Length: 505
Image 1 (cartoon, one colour):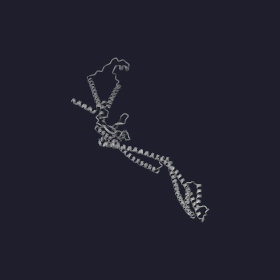
Image 2 (cartoon, one colour):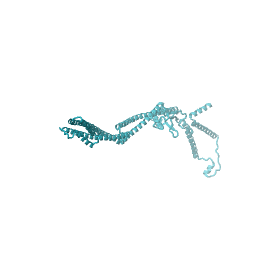
Image 3 (cartoon, one colour):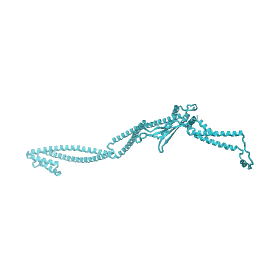
Image 4 (cartoon, helix red, strand yellow):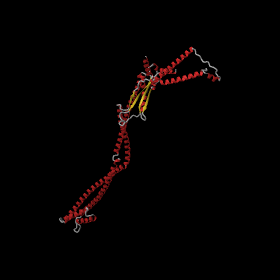
């Protein structure tokens, strides 16, 4: 009876079928050493994200409308209940190789209509593939746009740093660290020029002193000639201008050398006067020599004054040159002294510039990689999902589990049989053997009268045996059918029974 109940349950319980679509994760067709993967999430996280999107309210509502699910009157439910029930019937199982990332996953769908659940499972697989392509393309495009914006920002900062560095170099041109050697050489040259300037200035001042002395001597000489001309009569015994000049020559020779200009000039004048004294009269001789000496003294004074003015100009030039050289030396000295400070400031500017430039180059490389990744995704050369095994129409129901019900029916039948036998044995107080009386009453049995069946009772007993045998055969047949159904499935079993029945007919 329990087996019959199990058979009825197998027949009456609603059949639930299960099918699955196997999706393989196809690696990028372009090797990773040529194009670096810029996907920020790993595959399992992406599958979980796609699962949430596929099982979202909006998408499941589209599935319900597309396949006309829950249209029967017994499925008159709220949309929330329909969505929740449909979501429970979807499962995603990720499989991976040992110590590797996921390489495939399975979309499992259950339902009562075998053909319909296969179509829905394949539709869900298509949703997964489309969502994966969309997510990858959106992510690489978003990454490329983000890198483009960041690159523009960094490029502007880099241009600002370049301009700051340029203005700094322009402002402190000549005092930069790389110009230190040049500044030291220029400073050394200026110091040598200052030394030469000081020597030239000292020589010019010495020449000025000498010319001033010569001017004073010329003026003194002219004064002497003028005073001598004021004398109306020169006594013969008196000294002549020639004698005076000779006396003056002696005085000059005592003070200066023979090469002194005044000494040479007086010698020339003395020679001229001696030559003229031989030609002119004594009175005329005295008068013409005095006039000539005055004129010569005046010309000499003019020349000396001209030389003195030129020397004053030279001395002024030397003094101005010395001031300029000192100012220039101070300027270069300041540059040399401030070189460590400039070096530190320039190092800070260059460090900021180098850091920003390094960031810019890194972003530029990533931007190019992102553009390649975008092109690769648009051409579908990147990582893709491909249906390896599409969902097929199931032949065998997933629920109820016929094998399990069959085993439970057998177990329940055995338990029920043993229980009834034990219960009957417990309630039956009759004695069926002499030893039962002897054991219970502790008295010997003298004789026993056997039970005698009449003809009607014998036929009834025989009929019971036949019915028991038929019931046993029916039970064995049911067990066989359930065994075949649990192994082969209902449809295969029905085809097998129909085939045998056709042959018998």
